[in-house]
Length: 287
Image (cartoon, rainbow, N blue to C red; front, side, top):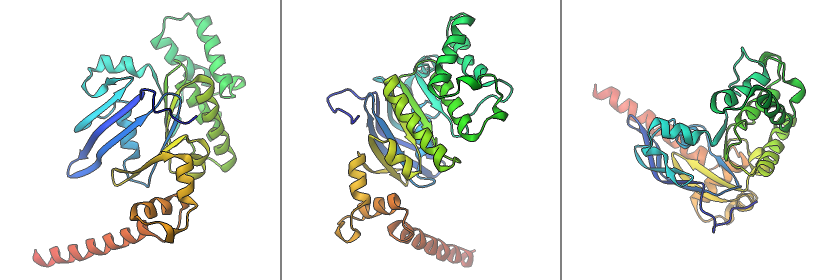
């Protein structure tokens, strides 16, 4: 479902800047995510994807700018206020992040025990419902060590939806999975987004997954947004002829989407490495 611009954004980032020491990791990020859509954030390693995600869940505070969830600026909240907002969020970490000493069912039940006043029989029912949604109801009593990589992802997702969140965040959900399992996880993301009517934000570098699940896509490069658009816009750019593209930015996006070995991304990297080598030689002779 494509975003409807008449809706108010459920996530709104304005002029966000973040640096670690002298390195500026995010540089003037502006992004809006609308209710019910799947926004996929893509980009190369080190482009700032994971740092952006950490800001969205409140584990990092920007140096400049604002991050609004549900119309509230989380950068100015106290820890208690932020924890209340976090109850409306679900997060699937790259590893699944299950507690190895707990069964699958106990992992899912933990959030319900800590953050609700439900009695144990009701919690047991809720756990079965969440596990059924991800196809793991019959594996409730297994330990995480007994699960495959894909099953761990699904168990982590069951835990992420335990409190019926309004926004789901996914950090590299297909990482380390074989193609078939990855496709199953992609379909699960689509199904849960539609069935639960949540907004989903997916950070990934897997292009097959991105083009399968996205309503809209956002590409980061060197801490800046290169392009935001519908999946169809990105598909058209991916499939375009390079000599018909006028801007260097579009050529860079196209190379990343296609995974081409040659293009502006690799040319830029080779040039930068060469310049860095010359600079180091120069500095060496000055000392």
